[in-house]
Length: 508
Image 1 (spheres, helix red, strand yellow):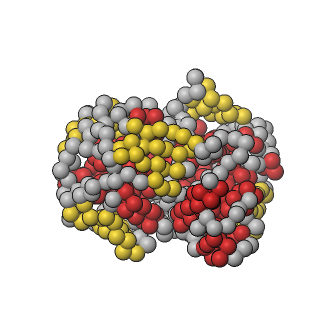
Image 2 (cartoon, rainbow, N blue to C red):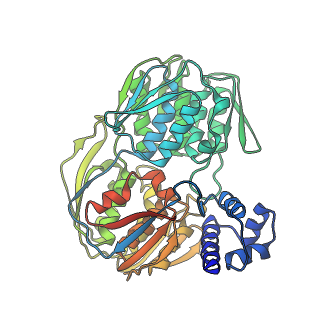
Image 3 (tube, helix red, strand yellow):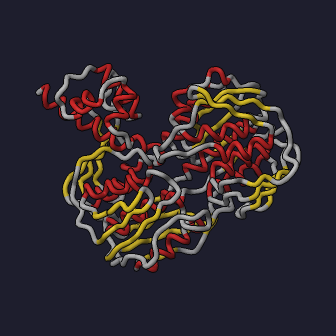
């Protein structure tokens, strides 16, 4: 029995290491041991202490086992079931985290409606609470109230929570107006390869922010100044644009931001800033003109819009399970390219007339998807900044292409590692060929098969694997799904409500 547990633990460690993209030698260096010792551990041929298991889990950012509290969450999926009925799209993960960071601009009370109750939000709330911000769920836990203190205690920041979310980087824009010097832990989040913060620094230096990085900490010193000419972003990134907006909002003057992202979360942040009294011109374009305010002290009530990436996830769930499903509250202006591509592939669907989201600005539809005979697209699938095909929607085309007739080339040029994680679909019967770290060739159609596997460490590929498990006949297990919970609220339960059979369980 003991040998069996060693083998099982060894397999979990091996899977976690491979998903991290590490070799045995790299893990050994992190642990201060030898490659041969790691090899013996992974084969189940070496006794291993609980302390060593904990150290390995910390090194790989993957909870291998747990003691004294509920362990990591896993999903058991009985596949081959058709979905039916209707399901609502939740509010945007990326908008909600930007608005939480944006609440630091306001001295008054902020209420955000229908905030997604996800791990990424929880980590930011832990950080905010630790520095003195009072937050509470109101209206039966639907809405979130945020009340800042007179002064923030950054020395008390929950560093562990901060390191588990890349969104902490968006504290820089608001904090540079409140503090002359401060520290932030390195940003974390999904394992998607090298992602520098240099584009953020180039933009924020124009406001007088200087950063040095040592031993896992960003050390910030501020000598406040106003940009004397337009800020040109070197990367049309969403969080880069949001950080520049957050800095510009408290700049007492006019800031012009060029090469700005016009994506959904950026628009939601602009709408929120307008609710705070900050005038923003050019929303939805790549040039934003921000009329900032030196002081913001208002009670504000704002409703973030729905999440287009979750809508794409639910659409893909219907496609891969060959189901008829109505997806309600779809933010169509951020899915128009995806729907156009799917129409060319042969997707059978209907859409309602457009109606306004609760923010009064975003256009929504209800979308009904029906079983379709799809053909591979002639052109490759690749992301572009909005209004192009959304970067975060690219992985879902891997699952969709896998059920289409023919070959589809997917070029995920933005991230270093994400395309690699898509090849996990091969363990479920997919035929994906990795051409290089950014390009995958998908051959369809696929006869899915059940499997047990570790959850990829990147949010969207993890959900793609779950969708394929839903299509595969038999019972699959997806282990340690924290990364899914980072971005989706009660996804398993909600899919079960339309006919899926997904059981949540934990190791004892």
